[in-house]
Length: 131
Image 1 (cartoon, rainbow, N blue to C red):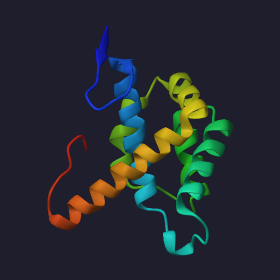
Image 2: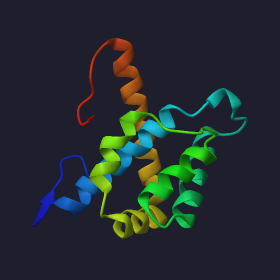
Image 3: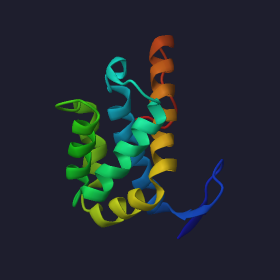
């Protein structure tokens, strides 16, 4: 089954898009909790390089999230990551291969989602597509 997604520039299988969305959701929570005051360089360069290096070294999605969390200067991630991690269970190869080849677009989608969540929280609202 193939589906054209509104606002997307490509046609993706439905399941792959759901998996990517769950991955972006997980990553956006990590991005949102990075202690940015301790980061002394370009935020996006810092973020995308951490995503790529974590994806290259990880053998599972859980290992990827652990490495990403640690490389971003944190010792743990919040409980809000657990539901999206559960959605990714059983898709390790697909997720890691996608991350290794498309880490920049996925990382930046996570940035956009994290910033939208932060803005919505400040306004007391909720964003579309957030779990």
